[in-house]
Image 1 (cartoon, rainbow, N blue to C red):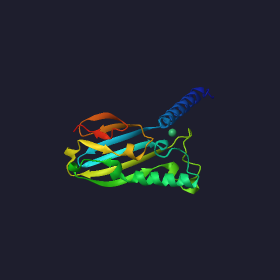
Image 2: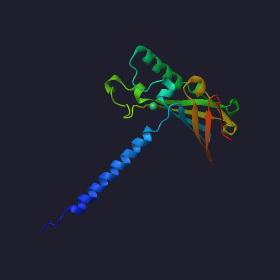
Image 3: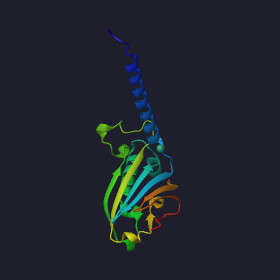
Image 4: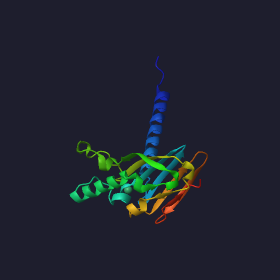
Length: 186
Ligand SMILES: [Zn+2]
């Protein structure tokens, strides 16, 4: 005697809908980048200063597709080189006695191998570059402000939105070109 399986398929349909909705939410979140606006996350934990940068590729390079011409490849290499130079982009005060450590620079669009060509581009045609810089500071109490070299290095960046996380507080700071001094309020 078979009862209808309808309640089960309804439930299955609901799960599928929920999965689709959350996938759409993730995609919408990923698509939210504004050209000219760079996001910075700054965290100080004991002696470790960590700065994360999330930048639209357009703001660094002027385009967001895979480099095709020789000139575009050269420009892309120059951007990767600049972004790897953490000591030039992030300048803590000398009194904090910081030493530059690990640097990670990631951009699927610029770094993908030829074999992976065609993948990694976002559906909406946008692309980001993410970078993380670590410093070890002997005097973290002296990290009152950090000079950010992004405006000098990249003329297309207009605004930097900074999220600062310290031992006991979080704050948000917005830097507008040409103001490069990030005050941490320590
Ligand atoms: Zn874009």
